[in-house]
Structure formats: C-alpha cells, structure tokens
Length: 401
Image (tube, rainbow, N blue to C red):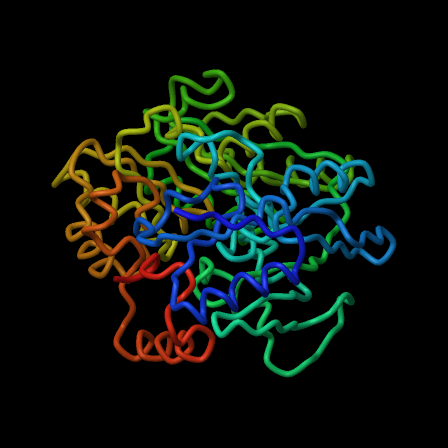
C-alpha cells in the first residue's frame, strides 16, 4: 500500500486529483482511532492526514476555533481548557474502545463521524457546532462552506451535510467550530437499585423537570463495577448530571433529589468524580477492556429501549448500558453479533439505528455495519455520492457494499 502524507491543503488536493486521474481509490486516515468502524478498506492507497495539523484561529472572546483536519482533538481540548472553554457536544474518544490509544482522534474525524457524548441530549452533536470547512471532493476539486462567525448563512450548509459521511464524500482539510464556556462545576445525582424500566421513567421525569440535566444514563448492576474504579459496584445506578454555577447546581440537585426521593436510595457524586465518570461513559469504558466481543451502538426512542433490550436478552446473551436518557444503548454481545435479530427487534420497538462499532474484519466485511437505509433515503444518498465522488475514489465500501 502507498500512503500519502500531505502537510498542506494544496498537497491534499494534488493527491486526490492524482487518484481521480488514475482511478485509484483512497482510504482516508487521520490518526486511525476510528479505522475499525465500518467495512474493512479494500484500497491500495491511503491518504494520511496526521501531518496536516495546527490550530489556525482561536478567538476566545468570539467563541470560535479553526484547525487543520489532522489536529488531535486532545490538543484542541487542552487549549480550550486553558481558557475555561470546551466543545460543548463532548465528542467521544473511540481509541481505547477499539484497542488503540486514548487522545488520538482528530478534529476532522470528529466532524466526519459526527461525534458527540452524553451532553448530546442538551447540546447536540458535531454537526450542530461546526461553522465552516475547507475540503476536497472526490472529483479532485477544492471547496469551502460556511465561515468563521456564529451567525452565517451561505445557502446549502455543506459543513453539516458532510457530518457523519465517514470520509466517503470529501476529504476535510480545515474545520471551524463554535466553542462555549465550560461549566464552573458539576454534580451527579445517583439513584440506586432501579430496574431498567424504572430508570427510563426516572430519567424522563428528570429531563422534563426544571433541573436542566445535561447527562442522563443508566448502568445495570453488571456494569456498575466497571466505572470509576468500582465505586458504584453493587446496585444498578441511574445517573443525572447537573452543570453550571455552584449555587445554581446545588439548588437544582436538591430539586432532583426531591423529585426522585420515592424512587430509591440517592447519592451525589462531587465534581471531580462526576467528570471522570461521564468521561468513562462518553468513551464506553465499561466495554473497552474486552476487545474480542462484538459491540453495537443503538439509537432509538428512549422510552422503548428497555423493552427492546429485554426481548434481546431472551434470545441471546448481551451486556448493556444506556446513555442519552436511554436513547443510546451500548450492547456487547457474548458471541454471535446477532445483526439480523437486533435489527428486527429494533424495528419491532419503534425503529432506530444499530451500528456495529466493534467486530472482527471478516464479520464487518460480511454484515451491513451501518443501519441499512430505506429505499428512498438510499437513493438520495447514492445521488449525493454521485455528485461528490462519482468514481467512488474516497473510502469505497466503508459505509455500504
């Protein structure tokens, strides 16, 4: 395999233009932290963006940051932390979950995978915070979309349209994101001993209250011992995060405790413990220690998740935990990936999306890793692919065979 390592947007353009002229498909790589997601690459050439790095603009007062696509997310987050700011969508780090190092994800990969974390229920995902991009299409043409200001209207918003395309439409070279002030402090309310059905009702009540919950997760008993060094071990735990200024957090925590007092025993986790816990939930750390087991990421209606999981457990062995108020379910299978069963149960419980995040290359090559699209949406996706990458040069087959 030939690997190209451009150090500028011009070199990216030259590389893609060469690939178009030679009809030579390219695998798009940042630092490889998410390389194991999707169907295995079947290309003889790759374009490695790890040398296309550097923060090119940061204006804390304007809440705007721009960086080249290969810039490590860890570098960006460290700079923002110095100014008590953050990427509010809390992008997860897939590295350890897929057997790699932590902190290897890039800002370009963050956008192309449309990453988010527990705060998605309040702040959205990467696509909701991107302001502009520079990229190269599969036609070998450079283009830009959006800009460097929060209020920006330029017709079709290609920046958001490319989010979640996994490098199959264009190669991003630069990205600009909106940043926000970080919370002064946070506290997590932990309700112990609820069933998964009870937890769904408790999380819904908390999200519907005035407490402004920014994270809502449920860890069954089998998972509680795998976070924050086992401090929650023993009982299933429903977690509700409250962030903001100290007095406001204290007031809202008390209101949550009063609201849920009849549900079960309630503990509170202080700021540093809470931050560590939600990082581990964000990065799916409970399932990162065992690499050989298939892992699914399922998004569906929060109120239906526990019933779908119960039906799944009656058919095969699986371990789970819930985020996004139950709207995101991480499912670790004990053996067979169970793709057909899982997706049939998903359809029977209101629909949703199931993505096979971790499995052996042979399994990923044989199964639809991403949720199959309805015919009308698949046709629209095909037309979009035709416009951006008519020869199928970029990450061919990664999202669909």
